[in-house]
Length: 160
Length: 201
Image (cartoon, rainbow over all chains, first blue to last red; front, top):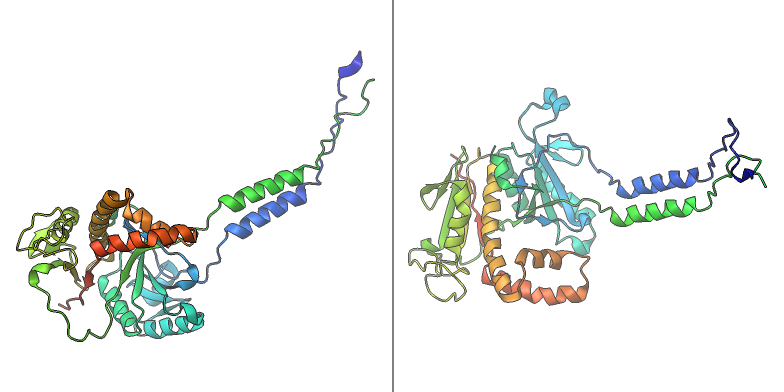
């Protein structure tokens, strides 16, 4: 009759911890796969403009990045608030862009050296003067394929 | 027989399976974010030998001043009207050789889409965001026309075909099929968007 005998109080079964390693490994793997390594930390403000007619940048190994924007809060004391160029991990002047592109190009395997794209990640508050200077530099080293990296969104939001 | 112990221990043997199931689920569904933007080609530094003579009517000039105002073909224009104006210019087809154009055939505007060139000029103090918006509208004008022709010929959007063609995950057989179609549409409306050097004053 006592098939469903009442449990005694204070007799909690121990929770098995045998699966804990699995859970931990699962989390570990998850974060391992979704984390992308940032090659360089941003020294400049980088709010990209919006555009609708965008194309994806496939094949990350064929892209050289150039960041432009005004220095972030902590660097403003030293570098001021005018937009600056960031190459890799440091600020650079316009003249250094050409040699940077050549150096980056030399690092890539020879078969893709001709198909590299330069991704310009420019803050939307920057002025075109600096961009034009960069474009001149890129033309000098024959890096003609550029991509103005943007967010996807209504382009008219840029004007506000 | 009455059970003397409390609840039986839950079998944890399958926990690992569940964990791996979840792991594989996340592995498959997570895509690492890729950057996207407007692709452009800069003109080469050396001017070509014997530069072709281009008639003024085949050039659609867009000038952006430092306040972000547009001067299109010597008229002030709102940014919102730019796409329509550029589309009308591109498919004007004044010489009648373009049988797919639906333009007005205005003799004062472009001869055919192959000859039509859009020239974009900007001031050094133009805001980058304005410049991108203008670029976006001009590329949008090309894409609108290309989409229309792709819909007519192949029943799908050109932008979709192109992104599928450029995506490395698309099987090679599909890409080979798309290659000719993409090329054909591109030849109908070649993207001739010249970025003239910035005016200095």
